[in-house]
Image 1 (cartoon, rainbow, N blue to C red):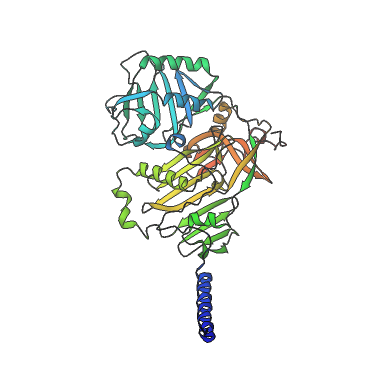
Image 2 (image 1 turned 90 degrees about the vertical axis):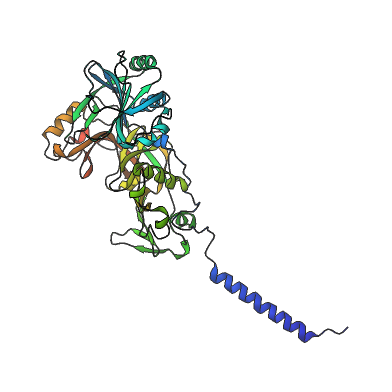
Length: 456
């Protein structure tokens, strides 16, 4: 049998041409090792953090005990978490609207546990925060919870208080009232308690702050999150290969495609989706069609951050719901250290995560881009007492008293080289945002000098 070498060469030539074409096409169409997202949803890319639940994120910022006219709080702020965990296990039932014709007040002989939340909470999640039956069907919000621990059985046992004067207050019963009374009496014996000061603010909000402060600062080393890898970019962009790097007028790095952008602001970032309704506006409808906007904002924002494991916690640091606005469609989760809020006024993205919605999709997202790791003890910081703070606020010209909407004892977060410093500070909220009581107050009593790094 003779072999036709001309035919063999022709077949080999055709094969090589086809192989060359396939390889060239593969190079042209290669877009990197990533899983492109579909629609407006993110991919399974992760930030190596953790997931969170409503129960962990929605907790009181303060617990105050009204003991027959005295105001008491916990010397150790972390004790509040333990007490709330215990209270959330109580069985609540028989939910109903608290009658507007009834006067709601705490008189001087009342024994009441008051749970103070930093923002209005949708009543729809009461069942996720507390142990309840199926009778909770009232659509409202609450910012305070009052648990009555009086022997007088005629008083309501628990009231979820709406912040708005014309809002709906919710009343519920506790299954074992006697145990509640005993628990209240035992609290004062089992925990170290301190006296609280009370102040009525111009927005008809009552705030409490300790007469004496017991708060210690911390310092943390940190690790940064790389924005250059495909894993990070896949969270925010459908096609990471199309992302271009630019710089804005302030010198910040900007990652962008034709629809979205991520602005890197030091160790924080701000993501914006300029076309949030591009793919599924008809499917999702609008906020006006949503039965409970607050619950939607809360649930959706948690799911969104969970989808890329964005909760960077640990080493005493957590996040808590601190603001929920149905007007701006924005949810804010603030960093807390040992149950005290953390503030970073010059770059709020360092100490909080916020998600803003537009057309029921994530429109704007602010968050930190670093993981706080090794903690170090920080030297003690002298602060104003509650009495001194109150007197200062009444006399200072720096902050108009009628503009103050909240007062918190917390930390101001500042970068010092390779560490972040958490400095105990009184923080005042006005209609313009949070302010530190530092500039014209006594410097010694508002942060002082930085102390050397202590031992781990």
